[in-house]
Image (cartoon, one colour):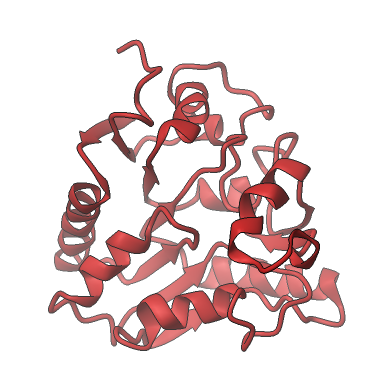
Length: 235
């Protein structure tokens, strides 16, 4: 793992942007994308740039079950507002949270991933160490799965909804095994609330109790953290 310590999200976004720009220059064509607060500054940097993704494909990590794409809290909506409306891709894939047959949707998305091997995967991380929506206990070799969100994840996401009761309790998520197939992985983490998760990811044992610790198994991972998120690292 390569750890890049930055002073804030703006500097972190610049570091992530440089990785994306280099990837494009070296013929990266498929980009795995994440939602949440951590990559927003990065997407803003990409939107303000002259990078061209019109011949590229994006594959998103996850989507809430039960939210239509038009809902302003869906990840379809998030990606359009923060990236796709300004930087379109040739093709963009996001799980269908309204699929009437969830097992069939999981298989469909596994095929999407198989047909579009990810060159660079963007990740955030939850306070409990989840990546995508792979909560503690998720197998390191899991494929796309329907996930029951933990209480801590629901509470963390409640700030985006008018009422906590409105927060979906399930999601479709690319599995940890699928994430690890990406050629390169870039994870953003900011703030003291992510410090325990980052310590477990980087220095802890490989355990399903901290899903992101699976990244220790990958040979090309860059973790971009501010001082607060890195505060518990011993190295």
